Structure formats: C-alpha cells, structure tokens
Length: 87
Image 1 (cartoon, rainbow, N blue to C red):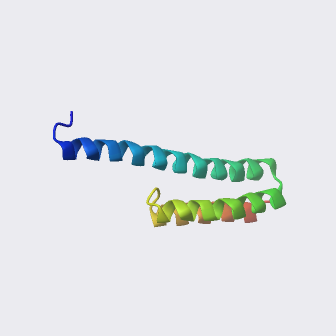
Image 2: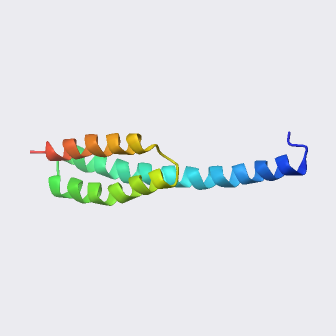
C-alpha cells in the first residue's frame, strides 16, 4: 500500500485516470459493436452510417492515449473493407 504522500496522491490519480479510460474504451467499443451489428444485418447504408460515427470516436481514443494509432487504423481498415463487401 502507498505510504508516502506522493505515492498516495499517485494512487488517487491512477484510479481517476483508470475510470476515465475505462469509460472511454467502453464508449468506443459500443460504437464498434454498432458497426458490427449493422454489418451482420446486411444493411449497407446503416453500416456506413455507423462506421462514420465510430471513426471519430476511435481516433479520439488514440489522441487520449486509450488505443495505439496503428490499432485504431487496423480496426478502421478492417471494418471499412467489411462494409464495402456488403452486397
């Protein structure tokens, strides 16, 4: 357990940051899930709309340090290719 005042403060800051990052990650996953569901339903226009909504959220996660830039780029690339493939 933290003993010094500095380490106690760092523990508090870590908890607060963890909560923020967890909420952000959950929000991004929700947007990605909406895209997945639209792809599964086969509705191309809904999938494209969901993808357009998910993209800025995913990139915001990158700027906030929740996801690595390449991870976000890979997810976007794979999702967009799957959306394009919908007949």
